[in-house]
Length: 124
Image 1: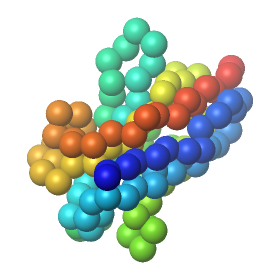
Image 2 (image 1 turned 90 degrees about the horizontal axis):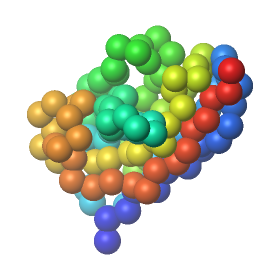
Image 3 (image 1 turned 30 degrees about the vertical axis):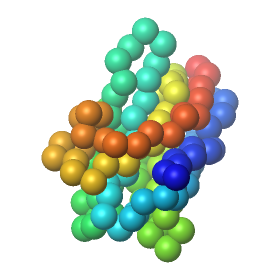
Image 4 (image 1 turned 45 degrees about the vertical axis):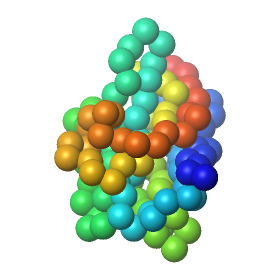
């Protein structure tokens, strides 16, 4: 059974930091790309960051470049999203997803499996 379990969300003040984790199981982690998406109320799901477990290539949406860092621990089948200098506009439910044929990292339709999400709230 494929599982992706997010953790690490919470409430933080603007300028603070959080580290999200995505623990995975049930698929060949080394062959997949793992992405982080977020969805705020009334908005579309947005691809935030992604990492390829094959070659380590990464993607960041412009609004988080320089603030967020994605990393992968292949031994633990886990991907992390370190979020620094958080802003109120980062408030959303954050989801991790995995895909084996991800041609465009920011496009959600390329991903096969999704976690349940974790809430991130940044207060001003």
